[in-house]
Image 1 (cartoon, rainbow, N blue to C red):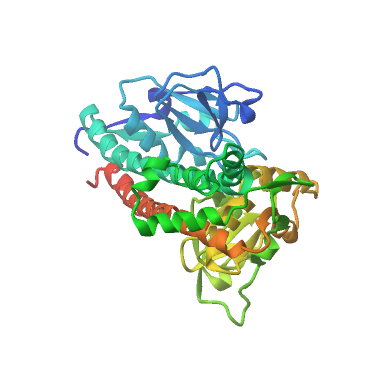
Image 2: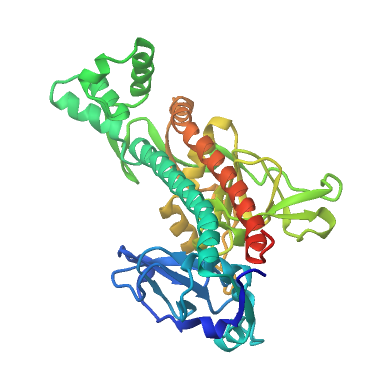
Length: 423
């Protein structure tokens, strides 16, 4: 190896213990809190200066994470302190390449100990080479992170529109205020829906104006009292069973494919399928049975507070029987179902209803019976327009996710070739 030297991890880095912390799950602090497998909350005071590396210490899943900013590490993880002049980006990828988070000490609870790490040898290139390697891999990860941020923004826009139409009833309230002020209720609703002023509405193309006018007409101009508080007149409380079918199709030995691409609860977090696994069907886990279609919503029924849910935007996936699979009765219902089923308040509801001791769970029907509010007469009109307004957000999100899969594959192919001096 050119310009490489051999050393031990104990000579190059120190693994420092994190500290216990309370209240990070519900905090709105500035600094991210890391546990054994990644970010778990926020706090007002950091423990470590960024940039820095976090290495999981306890538990079945011990990840390696990089924080650009100051951060906090709880006592299930280490933070890494270099002892020598090592490029931090290169060090992060070297730790991942050498799988330090997978070293076990043999105890009943899987753990990575400092003693087991420190004695291991590894090869270190010159600082110049470290910087070049780190920069190549870092650029890929930064693009992945940018795509993730775009997807979060797209999701936030869709959720904001949902909240405006179906929770806050902004178009209805705008009509009510306009009536009281002697203004045109329809124009007021159009302004709220489009975010445009009256002057801007007048400059719209005729077809676009007519379409917006038709949207505004779907909302009533009165709120009435109900068991849920004020709701638009003519709207009613129902649940997702009116829009979705539950667990429509499962694989059996008679209809199964030769291979399946498996989606498990543990690899599905807060709307993102982080990883899939390929199996010959005969050797696949017994829970790999749910047939997933584009437009389905999957919600984990075991420990629902863990946020194991996602919107299916890829063909040929097979889900765990631990998911409730909600399939839209019409494709235009898909995004509405996903947002209602995975709303934070609904996830809290499911977590509250979960029972079963060591494996708290809810029934599939409990997920299907998630409440929502819809108009009695023009349900399809409102839902069709909602679908039309948000579908492009989810299509773009799907393309960004696929791009990330390609980038991650490139990075994971480059990583061993770079660090082993093959390239």
